[in-house]
Length: 212
Image 1 (cartoon, rainbow, N blue to C red):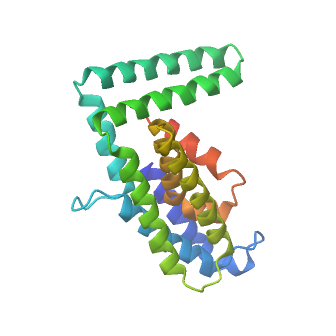
Image 2: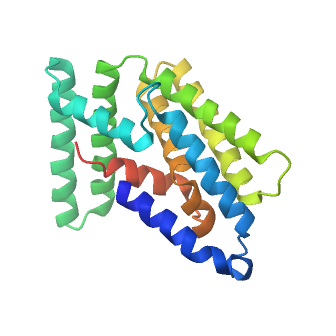
């Protein structure tokens, strides 16, 4: 994850000279705004006082999952491993649809383990996303940043869906949607520069591929 971030920022620096000629139409000003906004989002995702960013938070969470002795959390993690095994088998058999479905179920099982250990994880993640959005919008002000604003509008839609899921009692879906939102903000520079058509699919794939 850290490597991908480093590559993204390096690519931004290398391409800055030619941004005004960028055939995709992304201005250098908007790319710089996206970089600053991404840093803001990463810092908001950090644990207060820990001096870490989004990536550090993910690492600490995974370390907690790997060392837990909570029986219910362990059961969820075993379920996740079973789904991943099933996904690999389905993929080897050429059944990509089933493989993808099992991979998603594996990720949801991991989120169930997270909620078992941290019952307020959905609320805290939602608050982090809301705070990140507020800080980014303050940064943007009246500046022209159509692609960033479109992504922020989409993240706001995800937050509405997450709140609805939480209200209905589906904490796993709420957490999944809020993590998707935070991951989109965490990769804001690439989403803006590369014009990903499906921000959700990119974010979900990155989160689901994290080892545990």
